[in-house]
Length: 531
Ligand SMILES: NC(=O)C1=CN([C@@H]2O[C@H](COP(=O)(O)OP(=O)(O)OC[C@H]3O[C@@H](n4cnc5c(N)ncnc54)[C@H](OP(=O)(O)O)[C@@H]3O)[C@@H](O)[C@H]2O)C=CC1
Ligand SMILES: O=C1O[C@H](COP(=O)(O)O)[C@@H](O)[C@H](O)[C@H]1O
Image (cartoon, rainbow, N blue to C red):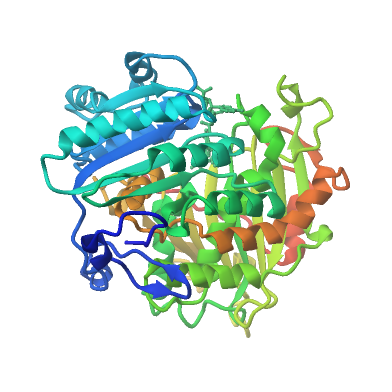
């Protein structure tokens, strides 16, 4: 468990303290069932009173993601009825029942679901109050304490998890209120943790300021900066694929890989979130966080072990090796109709699409373009990593027309890992064809339910595992990469190109891709198999 500033110094807790690596205090938790993951972690799982407080409970994220994730954890037995209580907090004056009615429709029930849903809803209590005055937070603390007191008959820790499903502008004041009025006071031990959502800042300076403000109130190990892409199944698979397979070890470098694409596409626009989106744009909304986190996992060196701090150390090194982005390696777009949203200014310069090339200046990746591409209102919805290999030297089959080898990790939809490769076309002729080795999850893992990203990450916050959360120095390094470009866009020095909704985005983006070295395989497309 991580050391916490001004937290109780219960010896039982201290005994559970994890290793200290490079100045970071890392928590060790016994939670991964796989033997090979668990042998470093000698801890006993925590029991006792758990209060989960969703601040901004009246909002969009809370109803669509946070409460449903909590419900799924409850349904699978990760949240125990006799231990957990959930508090919603926001300014909106509604009753417990009104909050429950707002979220009920988002809780997808299984076969015997109705009972589960109503039992889960009984765990929720709503407290209304402002984000900057003591009164509301005192009321919140009172409600949490009542719950804790009612559970203190059983031995155990008292844990308070604050999930800030709020606009980042209110994080500092809310953290101050939590610190002053709501931190865990139990003499049975326990902790207080804060989960913060992205976008964490708007550029390097504002992110650092926000980090300092929150850092004055809570220790780094208490702060969980969530990036839900780190909770996606195939993103979590990246370390396993890369470091547990002999196949990839000798190939994963500049000698063999020509280019890497990390792509996010949505087939809908900003829909109802135009006001928020216009302040941030696609680079801050998707690329600086989600796609960059994926890039780190694709490009990083092997960590010393799976301890969160070792992994995050390696991610920081990659980020610090990214060289400044060149203007000629960026294409920005804005879909036609984006400005029709009444919450978007008529002269908005905000990109809803961007393709850019990142270059990593290190021994492994020098010369390999990492092409990051994200766009809204495009012709399809998908997120994938596409690693394209170099041409085979001395091609006796004259088969370059068939296309290059590609290793593709489809994050969503239809999770899959496939390798595009050249094979002999079956038949009497010695001709070649493009085919694939295909690990489509729906086929291979029939009946296995892939957990939602938020579900997994919230469970990590309860267990105190920081591996899939963004550390402060990581965040700083991420903002360092994009801040100069973002400032040029904000100052109107870089304008987006208009594109049609439902298209591939500006043609200039495909031209940039080609210039960066990507070779498209014509006449071949991978179609996810159906059952
Ligand atoms: N929605 C989504 O899909 C995603 C959201 N996020 C992030 O999650 C966080 C919450 O997002 P979301 O739920 O969409 O946001 P909302 O705009 O829905 O805000 C959440 C709640 O915060 C309160 N609030 C809104 N604006 C302000 C303000 N200016 N000052 C004080 N309180 C305010 C409101 O509650 P009340 O008025 O009742 O106090 C509102 O219900 C944000 O950081 C967002 O970037 C991240 C990924 C996806
Ligand atoms: O963080 C965000 O992510 C969603 C896309 O998430 P996904 O899990 O459905 O891929 C995006 O729509 C939103 O703009 C952004 O804020």
